[in-house]
Amino acid sequence: MRHHHKGFTLLEIMLVLLLLGLATSVVVPNITFSNGSAELQRAAERFAALVETAHEEAILSGRDLGVVINDNDYEFVQFGEEGWESITQDRLLRPATLEENFRMRFTPGETVWHTSLQQQQQDTLLEDWFTKPEDMKEPHLYIWSSGDMTPAEIVFSIQPSGSGNRLSNRLPSFTLQIEETGDVSLVEDSQS
Image 1 (cartoon, rainbow, N blue to C red):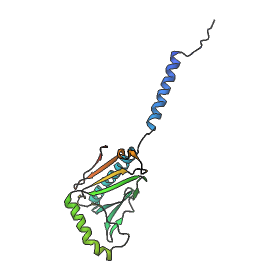
Image 2 (tube, rainbow, N blue to C red; image 1 turned 120 degrees about the vertical axis):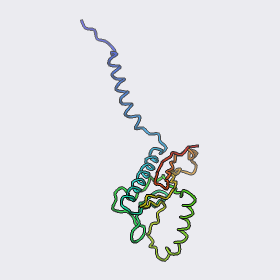
Image 3 (cartoon, helix red, strand yellow; image 1 turned 90 degrees about the horizontal axis):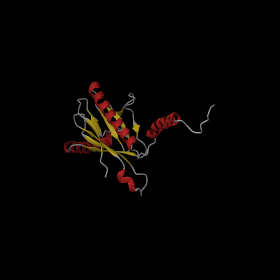
Image 4 (tube, rainbow, N blue to C red; image 1 turned 180 degrees about the vertical axis):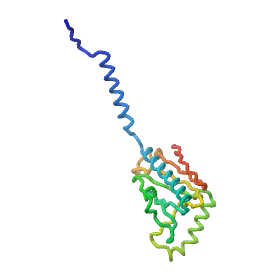
């Protein structure tokens, strides 16, 4: 005579728990409660990798390169017969735009470089006014074929979305530090 049990066996319960655990381990990592930190870090890491690639390219090809940096985008340029020109033939070094609320802030490094860049801009201001085409791009970051680079700090940050945002001081930022030798390092800024 057979008895019909009303309920689940221990094996069935354990199998269901195992399946729930597997499903949870797949779903939970894909849920993000992010304030944009991961995306901002990826954008900063990508830019750092591109600067390192451009540094190697400048040395290997013997071409002077540079980066024009705006609030929300950047463009790699090369020095040619007509001055600084956009790089169009390289897929990696093509112009890029960050996400809408991401910002970049360029600060020249050592005082000597900062002063030198300011003097160069002042010296060429009048000359450029007469001779420089409107679309001429002057780089912020110079990558020389000798292997030298403009020492600088480039801060990647998120622009708060609204004037009354109380959490704006908790928004992430990353600083890309570039040494004259071409060393590039990315640091997550401490949040207050």
